[in-house]
Image (cartoon, rainbow, N blue to C red):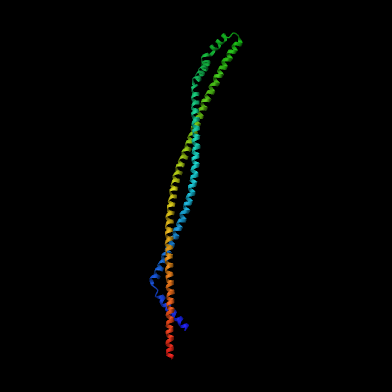
Length: 273
């Protein structure tokens, strides 16, 4: 009897399960497909976020390095500006020294004339005049020595003057050359600074763009996460409804099987009587 009831129950359950609304099963299958697609899109967005964050981190390191290099360049420019100011002051002082030296041109001309007078105009007459004017030989020697000393002094002064003027001119040329080199270096640093600032602005703009892309990807990822949550909730609801329907069908199948078995048993007994 129990075996017969079990067979009847299984048969009824199979019949009822086949009669479960196709719409619910179809909807669940569609939800699972949509969920798989959403999970794939979510994984793609998460991968995109990771890549963008890696790129932004690399860019941030480049920005930090550029900031550091830019500070160093600005320090170098400041040092060069100070050196240029010092060099310009030295050049001005050299110009002043050269002006002083050149103002001694008259003294140079005077010395030159004295030397020329002694050796071109004086001659034997000048020595004869000194001889007659001398009161004694000692006086003559003194005058001759004086003339020689004056000559030597003028000659030495002339050489010193020439050396001084040449040294001042050489120093001026050297300072001008050094200033030109400093100005060239300064211009090079200025160009590098401008280039670095341009690169820095571009990289910061790119970094801001990464922030916007990351925010957009995170927003899309959040939408896919919410969609998957809703799909899971709907799938769970359908499965719960299917479970309740299956349990209800099983209960009804059991009742029907029991009734049918009882009826068959009663009929059998009636036939036996």
